[in-house]
Image (cartoon, rainbow, N blue to C red; front, side, top):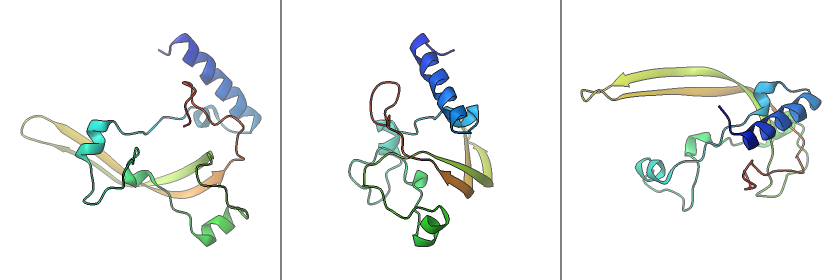
Length: 130
């Protein structure tokens, strides 16, 4: 159950999504920011300083990709953009260890995506930049 203030943010996001021709599912975004504990545990051999999100969540768009998405003018670094993607699950895995711990993972291959126009409001429900 969402707290009262979060419900208002969600309903506002749903309204905005509908106005843009998107589904309700596209209106609710989940922060994928790593906890400090997870970031430390999952450090790569040469981590970049200050990385708050897992490396595997980065999407790199090359020249031809930008052309397909009709992005002719590059945004400034730090600009916030929303995109919708359809991805194929290319791997789904579950494992268990002798101590009873279970881990699940899956790999997604983005096959279709759409960039949305930048929004004036790029802040999350706490007022922080997303």
